[in-house]
Length: 250
Ligand SMILES: COc1ccc2nc(C(=O)O)sc2c1
Image 1 (cartoon, rainbow, N blue to C red):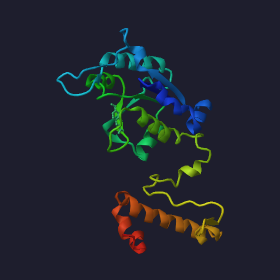
Image 2 (image 1 turned 90 degrees about the horizontal axis):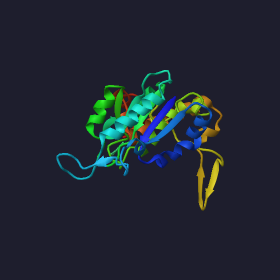
Image 3 (image 1 turned 90 degrees about the vertical axis):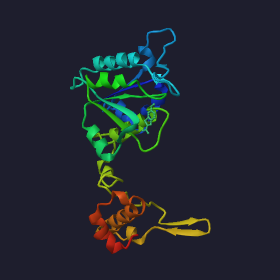
Image 4 (image 1 turned 120 degrees about the vertical axis):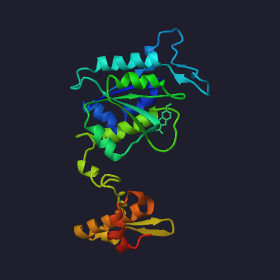
C-alpha cells in the first residue's frame, strides 16, 4: 500500500518511522511519502493561508498550493495499480474512524491524506479533488484537534496494522476491542500471585486451570461484562436479553 501525506508540518509524521509501521515500511509493505505543502507555494513567503472571505476568526488554507500538491501526488503515484488515490481528509465534521472503516481502507492500494490546519482548507479544494479522486472526510471522534496530522497518525496505524505481515501474530487481531463489536477481555501474565506491597493480587484461577473451554467461556463473559459496563451502545439489543441478562450486568 502506498500512502501520501500532504502537511505543513512534515516532522509531525516522523512517528511513521517507528515500531510496527516503521518496520512495515522497511519490509516494503507500506510505501509512505510525506509532502510539505509549502513546496507547492509560488511566493517568496511560501504562503499557505489567508483571511476568511466573509470575515470571521482565524485563517483559511489557500486553494492553489493544495491543488498543485494533490496533482503532484497523483502524478507521482500513478504506477500504484490505481490511477488515483483515495483522498482522506481528517476533519471534525467527518465520518467517524471505526474498525469497520479501517478494514475498508486496508483494502485500498493507495491512500492520500490532506492535513488541514488553521480554520480549515478552502472548500473549493474538496470540489477540485472530488472531480479527480474519491474523497472521504474522517474524524477521530466528537472533539476538535488543531490539525489533521494526529488523526493521520491514528488512521495509518489503525489501517496499517491490518495489512498482512505487519502484526507478527495475525491471531492477535481477532479478539481485539471492536473487531466483533465487543471490548477485549482482561489479560494477565506472570507472576500468578503478585505481592503488591502489603496487597496480594492473584490471577483469576480459571486462567491457571489448563481448561481451554472454561478459559474461552470466562473470557467471552468478561468481554460481554466490560462492553455492557463501558460501551452498552455497542451491544446489539439481543445481547441484553440473552447472555447479558444471565450475567445480571446493569
Ligand atoms: C484544520 O484541520 C483540522 C482541525 C480539526 C480537526 N479535528 C479532527 C478530528 O479528527 O477530531 S481532524 C482535524 C483537522
